[in-house]
Length: 475
Image (tube, rainbow, N blue to C red; front, side, top):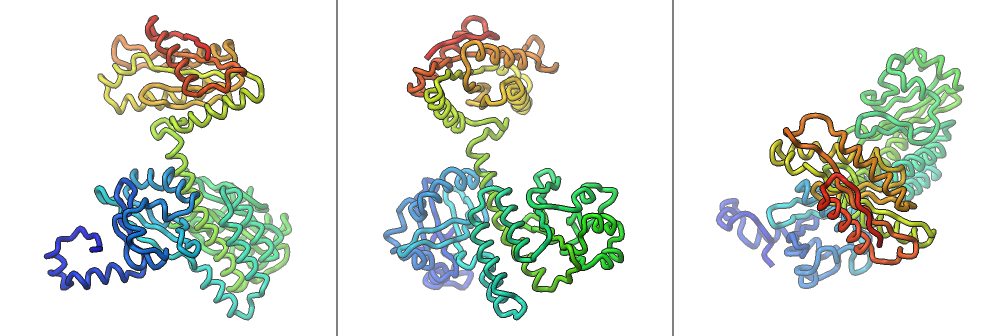
């Protein structure tokens, strides 16, 4: 197979490469190279990649790309990786597992969308992020004990199993506390708004760290880098404002190690000691290694959360999208049958929205839709599910709701939308036509599509009868 290239043949010759040498560069690359069409089929693979997976070119080229991965990663690719790739145009260092002829291979995948083709570079992540080099260096150091090596092994395994930021932070705190024989450890993380939050552990100086007038960079950790204070005398010379708080908390030494990601500081690992403690270079290196491992997993968790949000939530309004609404509806109907209670669905269509779009433009229309989504979320009950079905149509799923409850929710929804502030075209009012479907417990085994059809029919009755009203139907 001739390796895919966007350069014409004469450009290859101008560069001093003949066809065979260019093919050898492609096939002999130290990383795996793949091209996949937008329909998901492999159109090209270099020899490195084929050798890694233990398959022939005939087995790989022309086959579905996702067949190179186990079932869990196939789902991740289809529901998270592919949507955000098409949204952003490229992704970097996404951790996946590739199926081989003899087992599996952990990889880091870079991908770029170019026209009708996806180009990918695959890197062997068996020694991912330098863990093994760190462990080998630790083994050679006389001061590093076998216990610390076990900590790193255990931490790597536990970090990989963490599914949430809280779980990851708990693992980091516990492993750091044991490895450093610390009196207390804490993990603080920076959220999307830049605010810091204590996510796990104990922070004896938390009140001081939260007071901008009292703290400095050592506790805000944004610009201080790695900090190690070995005694109260050391603190008195370097950070005199902390001495009273350290003494009151019976802390005589502490360290602060930033958790750094590709895009900057993600948080910090703090260790506190009840006695003077001169931390060695190996002590700090161990903390840095733990923080670095946590940062890699934290970046993965946040990417997965972002991809999940793209897959399940409407990107304009932030409420549930069709897919998530469908899941909630199926689960809600099943629960209604088991627990013997009714369930209701409201389908809401905005009256007057087309005029807003036509006369004020789609940007203003998008602003109205975001406002409506916020109003709906405030008008429904705590456990009700709000979603956008498409266009200016929204859905509310009400668990344990009979007709009276559903009507009450619908009336609050209608009144909330009617309260749109001034600024609409002359003669235009923003109101809501609502269709309600009620499913009794003994009908909960019916198809969810039929339930929606009842609500949709009720909505159109409201439209036909003059809009800005509520109609009810039963499954």
